[in-house]
Length: 140
Image (tube, rainbow, N blue to C red; front, side, top):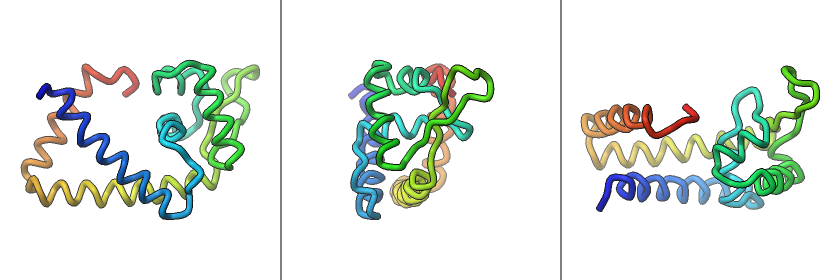
């Protein structure tokens, strides 16, 4: 199996566990597609065009997903302080509450993986993947 697929399988497993925890915590109106855009929102907000690019979807799709997230109270649109004509998508209080649940689930999965691999190998894997990110993630 190639390295890409070997990275993809655990990433999908993490994503599924996080979504399960989020839904179980009562945030049952967020979809996987919405979450893939949502998780790319920066701490100070992000433009829809940047969310689309990072999520590798069309601007129309990103706008549609952000509209849904906004109606559900997960995000809000605010003026961009750097460009009066533009708007930023920012995580709203309900979205921050969902992020807290997601972060807890991520930590639980990582703890399981660390127990399975051992601390040394888990730390080594993190260092290797972080180094690989240097040449694979244009949005670092």
